[in-house]
Image (tube, rainbow, N blue to C red; front, side, top):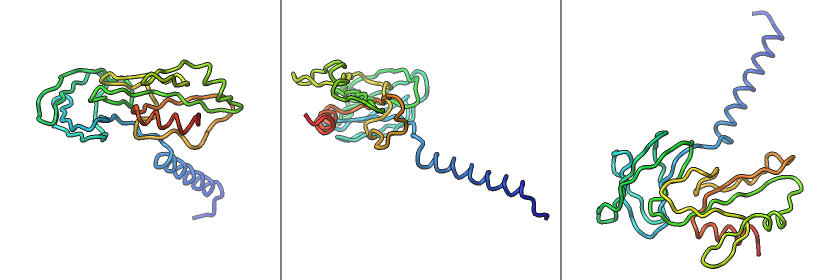
Length: 189
């Protein structure tokens, strides 16, 4: 085979291209999934779309498979007594099933160049939790299903800011106590 610089360049570019996509998909790409979460000290049993029975222990979260569109769930207590039989609509690629209907908070964190965190906090709404005001405009949620967030309860905000040219934000859903801990640590009041 003849020494062809164009062919070598094409092969090197192809290998670099494949490696770049490999790094992205294995290390950087955000996984999309659905969780059933139980922040209570109780154990629950559940069936999604009349499938096999699942168990979720106290303080645990479990990945589940959901289909886009209408889904159903039956939830049982630790004695396998039916608590409720409900339906919910899935439209997005990640979501959370609040099996115990407890309080969660969806918080929006802002990133960007020349971001004034203190004035931003004062401009956003206050959230009242246990009679105490919290700045930042976190939204309370206690329904069965939500998908109005970017980071799930088992994920953290990005440690690395990817684009600092403009102000951007990402939302994360927290269990109530996790949100209070995050607020105290992040805002340091």
